[in-house]
Image 1 (cartoon, helix red, strand yellow):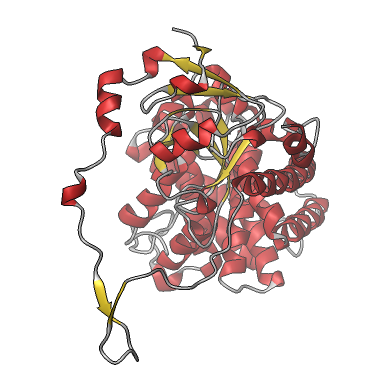
Image 2: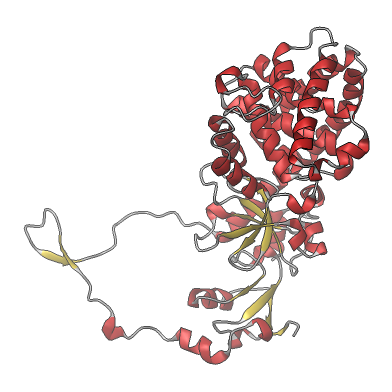
Length: 449
């Protein structure tokens, strides 16, 4: 049944309602929800310049809602407790609230602040998207140069890496970059993977205190870690996701050898970056390839790239049906790879990405779906989310900073893109967020009511 108009006098608990009006005309997180508390009823009755609608099919029956309205028997309520006030010579006074000034937070102003912060984030995302596309275009030429043995490839790589490092120096821009990392395009798989691994490796390097020079060498090695794959025919690369264990081992050993041979022809190619290409499929317990080296025999930079390479492969498996969502991949690294991958780098990656990395699709316990736009580093379970609401205006996206919302509103689970309806998936595409610039500012919207 579609929504039908509802008079405020007919409001009750259990109704699934829609508020038609600006998102800034009410204090609720979304425009459509089920009324769950008497305080929500009181707030709804006080709203101005809005229209109310109800969907009876999604509402609770009136009888059960009426029961919810009944208060507990007042005879069962505890009597006010008495305390012995200090410094009062044993005289007993009724307990009273402490005389503390608690700042009042206007929910509307909180919404305005969150919306304005999202607009700033959008500008960062737009700028980073432009720079990210430039990196992808330059990376194609520099990889071709390196494969051909031309020194120009290394000079271009140093320039690209410097630009990425500058991008990562600003926390807002690095968070925007994380959203783009989470949205690979299969037509550019090799270059997206190279850029993802390079960017995330640098984030870990910065977190672990590497110098800029060390981080540049880390990024160059990370960018070219799979360059040896380009010596294989396309049909072999397409089969990576279905190779048997023996064939895969041979492929991994051969492509690292190919890559080392390629870059060693480039004058002044950093030996630290060569070690990354040579060792990124080794493992700390000696089970890796091509040499079966163990922890102490491996380069620190290579151990960082190992972690990021596995993470990105888990999230973007050649067989899409076997790809993990980011939260699953991070959990896998932490739990299943404790003997094979460097723990400090795994922890640093989780620290950078959060429990729900930017770009993660999530379901909330109010039955809404959203995409994580940014991590709250002080509370990684409560990120900033762009919420899909079929009844909200595309010009006024709903942005929730869960760290500032009531604790009863929370993420229930991370979900796969394929589990969403196409129109929701399209609205919550990380790159789509660049186009979410509203026609008027939040303050103007609030004033318009």
